[in-house]
Length: 233
Image 1 (tube, rainbow, N blue to C red):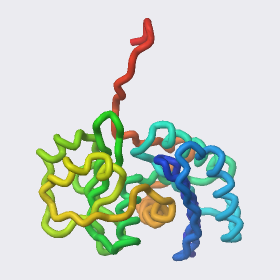
Image 2: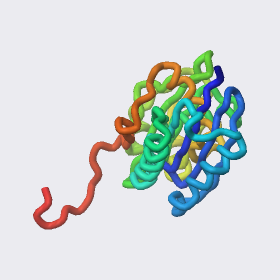
Image 3: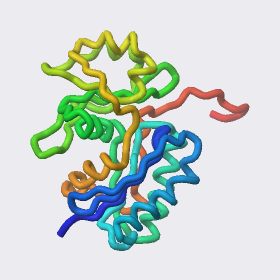
Image 4: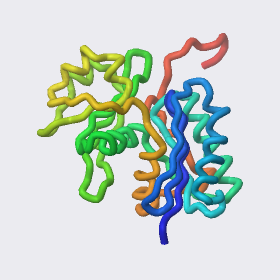
């Protein structure tokens, strides 16, 4: 039986929804940095209507788990949990960095991708991805948040050409261009739910679905520098 998976993502400036029914994908995507809360649910309604599928007919609901904007990640998981609770659906958290790797394959047929999202505070969210023969992606080492100059010092790439993806390359072009790897500039700046549903089918097959109340974001950055209020530890 063909899987039916809905994906929603608001983790970055992009806002997107996608529905996968078997091999077919219906998607809606818009750059909307401050309009996620008003746009995401109408997008959900639109793709479900086009696909002729209701929420309770889905096998799972995927969401952009991060890394990305703290507010954006929280909005996405909150909306996804609300939908999943209402339809009693299991949930799948999908990496925004891995989604950009898949997006770069979709647009450029790239099989090795260096994904970097501007994390503010002089840092980038970073992931190094290699496409597997089955169409899934392997992250080399792990996803991290790192200062670009530290990354340049520590980075080690395998042989071959690496495509770039994400806003980090625009934010720190001079530093990241120093990485010791053959780079080709890709066009993917943000994650897209159309790529998340592709990754979600592999996650579902691996048994990674969790109950809605157990779904959680991945911020990568464990602590955030902020000015403490008087009396707050």
